[in-house]
Amino acid sequence: MLPRPRQSRRQSLSSLGEPPDRIAAEFRRRVRGDLAAQDWYRHFDEDSLRWFRERGVRMSELLLGGLDTTRAVGREQLIVQAETLGREYGVEAKRHGLSLGEATQAFLFFRARFMGEIANVARRRGLASQQASALFEQADGTLDRIILALIAGHQAG
Image (cartoon, rainbow, N blue to C red):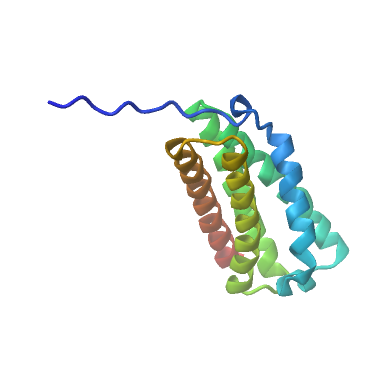
């Protein structure tokens, strides 16, 4: 008979004062700073790197778009598009000679930097723990779906 705890409505990134393009720029800066030191990076020529970079930019747009929308239907559409890119990543990684472990390592490299930017958002905005954990949970769940799509693409490729 106790009242149910109020569910706080999830806020968009924009409503928190964090435009997705700002987060994307910081994410790209983080990636550029650490990318050359990665072993799997050497498997790619300039054309391949461009292919992955273009799709990576699109994937970060989709991920941030999903975090920026409060509508479940719109968010799901963006996540499905990101999963499609994840599958393509898996196929291309295999085509370029990356093992499933190396492809996973590459994904985890980007995931860590993306989640680092989400942590920066929570810090900059002084989010309450409930808000911050909801943001992390959504980002983490979406990235889980994408890595599973990448694995499926690699195995099918």
